[in-house]
Length: 278
Ligand code: AMP
Image (tube, rainbow, N blue to C red; front, top):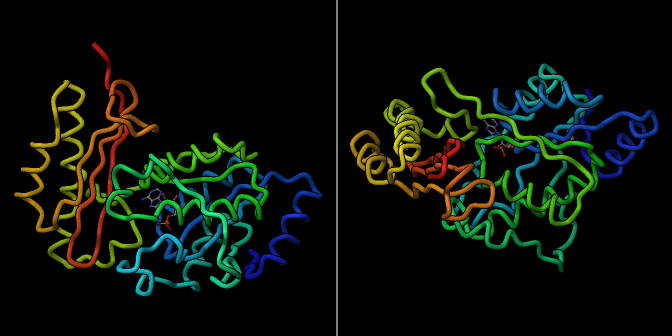
């Protein structure tokens, strides 16, 4: 497996692969890999000749009071895990390599960022779009892989690709969970022992809410009560929206999503399902 740190070297790797007609799968990550990231790579490996994983803690998607500095990093371990999962190359650039100057052009997620995490993390999705636009162009990927765990991010990236005719396909990968239901996340290491014991209640609240929503009822009050009784964290939001267009007209494909702020970790989770009309 190749470790690539510069754009120059990445262009070389891409052109070598394109010359042989290889299909390229891209898996963008911020590293500190877990089984969720591994599943993205494994899925990409099945559908492409070669897989490029990017590992870049993207400063553009962190707010001033967020955890950019203390975001967990372990490049050595990540290299081993990426190789085991089947990655052919890792692209791990410095921030200066990706952002050599202040860009004049701003890419905005627009109304899709008005809901869910976008409300409490202003500018976050614009930062995500900034980096994925660069990664899509630099990698010349045929397909890029994103987890449903970050469902709003996935919806926004699908919209970017559709609205601006990016020549690649976005592939959705289901959320990988711990045996007790907690969605795998690099940020789970911030949880205290007590918070880790409470965290599976997020998925339980979602399951309960899903049944209510499918039955035509408002799931939010019951979920709010349940989490209030079982979690010490503060609810940031619980929302039921259409998916992937994120409107309040929820007949058809829907997302039930929540975010809970614990002492050091803000956890998000969601379920996607169908609500039948009358
Ligand atoms: P991150 O490194 O957290 O930015 O995540 C990189 C990619 O992995 C994103 O597309 C995430 O949605 C995806 N991902 C993160 N956690 C999971 C999970 N538990 N299951 C599936 N995909 C995940």
